[in-house]
Length: 322
Image 1: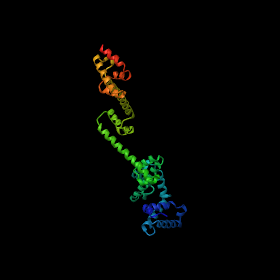
Image 2: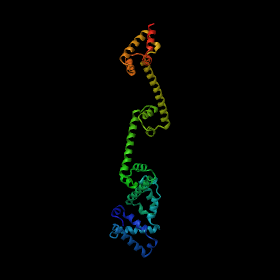
Image 3: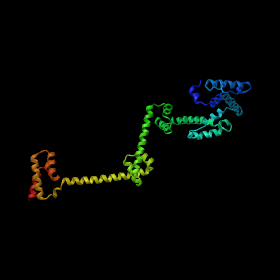
Image 4: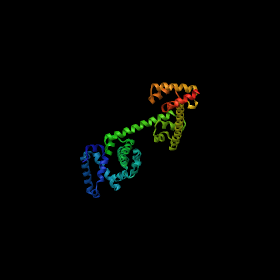
C-alpha cells in the first residue's frame, strides 16, 4: 500500500494513469469496464485519494479511461517510454525538457497540456535528471563522483544517500574543494599584481609564487610551451646568478687570504713573521693559531707555513732581511 507521504507527493492524475497502466485488455469490454472503474476507484480510495466520495475525481477517472480507449493504449505507456528515452544531456534543463515532452505527447494526449500537470512533469523530469546524474557519478571514483554531484548542485543528503558515503567523507571532499577555491582566488590575486606585464613576466611571477602548472594554464590562460620556456629561462638565470655568486665568494676568499707569498714585501714579511711567533708563543693549537692570525690580517700563505712547516719561517725571515 502507498504510504501517506507518497500520496501527498503524487497527484491524482498520475495515480489514475498508473492504475490504468495495470489494466488488462479484457477489463475494458462490456460490463467489465464499469467493474474496472469501480476497482480502480476503490484502490485509489485506499491510497487516500477519496475518488468515490468526489464527483469531480470520479469523472477524472472516467475521462482518463475514455482517452485510453480512444488512443488504444495507456498514457503512462507513452509517458514512461518518453522518460526512459531521455539522456542526461536531454534533462540538463528540466524546464526545456518538460516543454519538449509535453509537446511530443499532447498530440495524442490533449489533457496532458493542462497547466496544472506541468509542475508534476517538471518534478518527474528533475527526478529523472537526478537518477541519470547518480548513474553517471557511479562510473567514477569515489572522490570524483562526490565532486561531480556537488558541481551539479545536488543536495548534501542526497549525495550521501545515493552514493552510500559517510557525512565525514563528504565533508572531506567539500574541504578539498574549498581549499582549491581559495588557491584559485590567490592565483587571481597574483595575476592582478602583474596586470599589464609581459606574458613571460606573468608566468615567472606565478611560478616563483608556487602556483601549480594546471592553474597557470587554467587561470592565466597560458599554454604548456609558455611555462616550459619560462622555466628554462629561469634555470639559465639561476645558473648565471650561481656563477656570479661563486665568483664573488672566490674573490672574497682571496681577499681574506691576503697576498701570495711572492707578493709580500720584505718589510711586511718580517712584521708578519714576528706577529706569527708571538701568536705561537701564546698557543700551539692550530685552530687557535689560525683564528688569531686571521684577526691580525696575516696572509693565509704564511699561516699555512706556520702550522705545517714552522722552520721555514726562519728561512723566509733571513731572505727578507737580505
